[in-house]
Image (cartoon, rainbow, N blue to C red; front, side, top):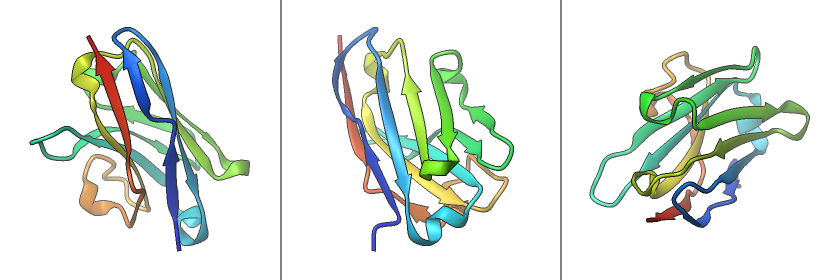
Length: 123
């Protein structure tokens, strides 16, 4: 069954904003670490940021600090990725992931993955 489901991707002009959502279900609900990763064509999966749902601490890769914000609505089992001031280099498929590890940046530490949602930023 679906454990994580992303939504909110699309096409936006440079400088614009998008908000991605990641709804958890089943066993994925019982995790405290929610991460966002992205993968551009021909590149590996890159850590974007993460949130510890138990204390709301967030972590970001340097390239998105000040532009992206991760938040969590635990009552809805949903995590959000608010992306502002988007740049063409942000174009990628974005994935959310859930797990119970403090190694937020390591994709191998996550147990559940969403199917991905495409974000395209035009110049």
